[in-house]
Image (cartoon, rainbow, N blue to C red):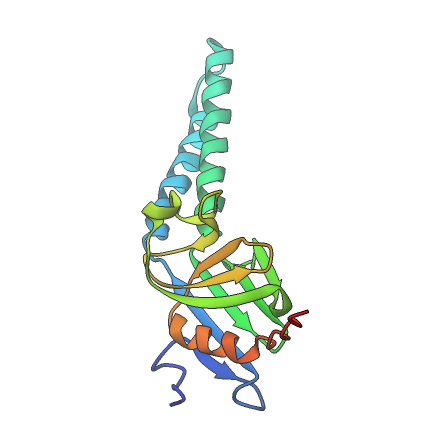
Length: 187
């Protein structure tokens, strides 16, 4: 297997022993436009609170200000949390961190993973949008952009999907770490 330079491909193996830890990322620059929309709502709410005359129609004005600020904050924080995702696979766990703060975060012990598969095309449409998603018939996913992804089959029958660059290498790395299942006796 050929090792990739950090600038050549986002998914790479790192550590003192080159094959101990695999890291990968995925980014979505379109989310910045949505974040700007949230910022605009927030700014409009603040401007409305400062510039408007509070002498008449106080209830309607208060609801407008609070509504704009709340919507602005929800959009702003909801989009900034899913600008990018970082995936790390070490010898015992797969960890997914979203956004600049690293929240939401999911850590899955590899002991709970039955198999790992490569998904060539994961789309926000199949999951109902960007972000941390759950669909009972499919499973749970972290979708920050359309494209390749990693699908884990867990021991309890659930699936976990994450969009990440160089997902094929991540699948190989995880499969190398899965514990061989002991054969059950026939009797």
